Length: 333
Image (cartoon, rainbow, N blue to C red; front, side):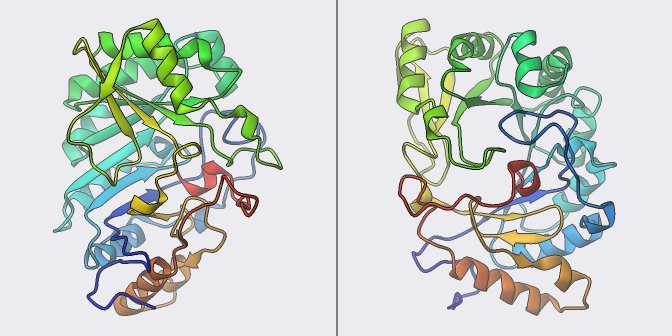
């Protein structure tokens, strides 16, 4: 089954306009929930070139994609990334380009990324404690991340969003300090429930710090929150505003409150594999098409078929759930 009007529509009527592109599987930290200490990265020749990414984006835009998010690994370790941002920003039909980064390399690049056309930025930060940062990432660099956040603000990004992974028994003490930092510096903090894409061989559900528990911690530690008005039903985060008017918090409850039926996202991995879900068990080989003289129409057909075949949801909360073989760093955040 494929869409009959040239848009990326699946069998559940979900229209897809959001493409997440991983530009590398390499990373300069080793977060315990994302990748092992020792990693065999993809050969550089396997990664899509900027020209190949641009061509795929042009095809995707013709089918209704208008939002792009660049991810990794850590996208800022990809050489000359602002050049890719500039190429994508020049494509007619693109309305929004964002980037998710761990922030270590952000400070010297923030202005260049803004000037290239990047307009949204998310910085991953799970703690305000440098020692806990070292424990979680297996690397130093907390100060560089903070510097990068301030540089992004100075470059014009607003709001700068902070993504914090919530892990039960690990990050509860970090919840309020992160929120206080975000309130002080006019940042938008988003907590993400721990998901089954880590290095464990099985789904460790007992590590999930539920969104409801995070709300309780924030209410007790700072003050009451209320649902934010005019929320985008397709956005993964449910937003809450502090009742005192000082800031906003988003909760991405992929486990406790799956948002699969409003999903509008597809993903392209760094090695050119198209995934219609973060937890997909099958991929379409776009790189083979790009390097095999396929026409734009043939690439479009594969895109349409991938989205048309998208499942109802990931089934994390059922016995039918199967953990993908790829780890998060090789899929793209």
